[in-house]
Image 1 (cartoon, rainbow, N blue to C red):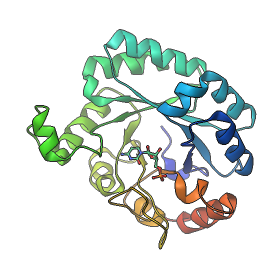
Image 2: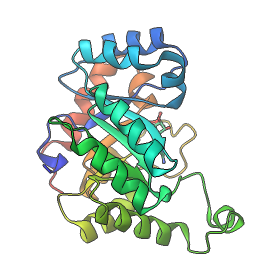
Image 3: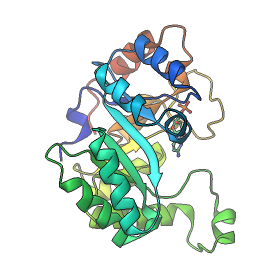
Image 4: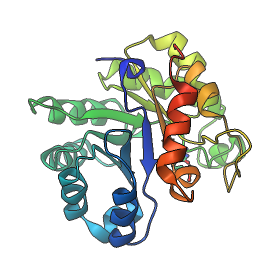
Length: 239
Ligand code: C5P
């Protein structure tokens, strides 16, 4: 698997809109040669596969962020359905366990141009106290390491992680393991509801391959100008 650092489109713009018309209007202000786009649960539940097709027709590669988490057979079928849509990347939840992860990986391997398949480890909304409440007695940091290792052993392409976790995951799993990091804020920008943010350059230095960025771009007066600025900030940084 090619490392993201060789990729010219490392910014994934999160299209977090309730309405497909708004998502398409934003896509029409972006440039598919400069970025990819992410569709999450709200937008997909409202807009469905048609939106993936419409974005693909505009030249965008789509990260379908639905975090599948179910029995292996069901997740494998859902991954096949997503791969049939021609998405560039999709994800599952590593807490579904080894057999679920392997079933997901096998389902996408059948495609000649297969999507990247990554896993979510521990939701960043969960703190150690909440994890204990649901029966996890390792710290969030230990669980992330454990579930990232399980993801790698199961043959998936990488994980979604915070840029703070990226350095240790990169050191442990090497260049071929894709690290996708949200929680990115260009220097001096508003944090919104993100708690622990990193700048694009810090994230890439820590080993991030792909930066998921929403409001700093979608809320900007000139989204393409922000895209250019972030691309310039990370250009040439090796990880
Ligand atoms: O607007 P902002 O840049 O905060 O958007 C970040 C995107 O990344 C959102 O779609 C959010 O749901 C997603 N995300 C996140 N933190 C995670 C996982 C996903 O912010 N741990």
